[in-house]
Length: 484
Image (spheres, rainbow, N blue to C red):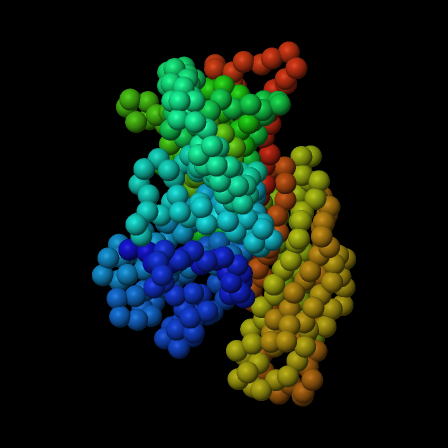
């Protein structure tokens, strides 16, 4: 049973709280308890989607989920005796994060957005949580929430409107009131037909958009580890996580088909939105995904590509992925204390630039500690960006500009500059691991793309309305590491 929910920023400053009862503690009181009983929850969790939990009192447990999309921490306090376990809490908090994104039709929620819509978010939690438990009815559909919590009206307007209606009801004579009720009953039969819902995830009220629009956004995050063997790269392990989000602003009740070309990749058993039609035999074909879309933004499917199995099955050698390959060498120069990194950024006509490229360099500090050497990294040649030594010995960052053109070969060469005398016979400090971080728009890492977007039926296009549709691709790194 859930007692309260909280949303904080990455520094755990309170942004929103929803208390289900008078005895539920404020975040200030909960935070004091967390600091004393479970300090591990205070650790930074901004590297990935994250869940942790701890007991904070008799029959009380606190759960923490970090949303990497919104850079927000979601907390909930639950009764231990009635709790269904961490997985259910993780799913609920992740679902609430997605519901808020879809409700406000945003790719990312800002703290200002949450603060300015505090009343609406409270009503959304009220719709989704009933008597301390998740609402298992169709209320978790965003279109149902939008009907219950209109997007462009403040709570104060609801209160004013309700008060005005009550005042009118008191002032209208009883005979006139009966007449109004009869009129409403006579109109009820027609309104029920007009508002009859075709599917539960689409609003029963007829959608009215100035233009008909349908956009598909494909995002892939890849995680790979390469190992250098005899100047060649070998894939140690790797996978790609893909999401297909849809923004639908279509009138009437259209039937849509999205044809996904997997380019020979095995996407396993993807997670599908309920709107996707499945054949009677349970077979799912990515080449023809048919559905009646919800109104607004929603996640059509999630999939995973196992790069390890593809290498084993096909026997091919993967030495680059995500338009980027990296090579580095140690032991260069007359004193064998120099190193060099070279990046090969492929030229792809639909990708004009690489965004926010950054490399983290890690040297073998264990050897330096053993012989108590003091040193720093000195850069001899740098074709792009800048290099920054870390406060921690044996680390540094090669930071590029906001945008880096494709079809380039950046090179960084440096050496180890010792601040103390190096003992005879001691080993050189070598570059051991390089981690990359970047993103780009225009292509997926796996090559998967949308072949076609078709409106099969159910859409009426008037003389003054147009149909717009399109697909966008974005790739970003998760864990991308090259090591000796």
